[in-house]
Image (cartoon, rainbow, N blue to C red):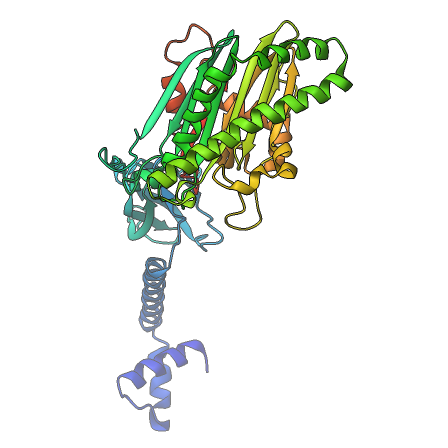
Length: 468
């Protein structure tokens, strides 16, 4: 039985026409007619065409039902997504186009099959995905499907900036900055309330103070109030202001003139014996100044019916004087705020303190803790450095240190400091920088603006003091 027989019999069966043995010869005569064979071929072609149309129709439906997963974007951040034709199994697609809303900030590049741009609006973005199949008879007929692209909002816009209550107990301004002379150099300082505080309208805990004293001495102090302490903002303020007032008068004492002689002898090479005398001086004068600060905060706490824990604050300060031999820098430190000294050509960094960091929450120490003044502990918190000249002396709170250096070990690496200085001067994603020219009258505003950098997970108060 040939194909024509099979084909005709299926047609006859569908029409309920029975060809029995009596009609077999009649059926064979009928089949041999040329026009019947032509009709059969035409019917086969029509059926084949119908099946092809069905396959195309089914394939279009499959693509429309197929799940296309595009990575999420974020407002303000560069977006690039490459369509992977093989992974999407679209090898039978002749042409693809994607229509995006003009206000989305995104475009489709048909040549490279990429979605690119910088998203400008957040939310569920509806993309119109248009395609044409290779085998479809009408090459101009586009098929459409909708694809969801999620654009996350700029996280910075989710943070509120609620002013702190001006009349609240121990209120202070949300942001503070200053610039002035410091010895024969300059100083610029900025202290900014962290986003975590601004989001709920609470006050800045950081503080700073500096002063050019008599007899050639200058002092800079920085303090970071503990976030867990209710009134740490006042503890940090008291620490900074009290150390300034103390040294304003103390540097006039004859003991400080004795120190001048010690520095001269030290610079002339008599470091062993004189070094011991200098260490004794630093221990007595700087240690006593820190202890006096602790006592003043303690008296304040008693007077205000507060606990010392409510005033917890880290504390660092440097007392500096210029001699013919160079700059003498005497420092004290408690807590996790770094003091860094960079030499004149920025080829070396010297950390003037060791950070109090622990492997557990609450591992740091505060000026409000009496145990830090035990003799075995206090000496490690003091330092003396005589340097012929320097490019930068920097004091900062962990709001700067954490995002910019991440680990304590990085503070010892000069390449990290070179990167940090380049960042300060404008080599960053925002293009914001500080011009350290002595004639720059807007330097404090520039530093304040630079300190608005965004770093995910780092929203603490930020204070940075730079002597340059």
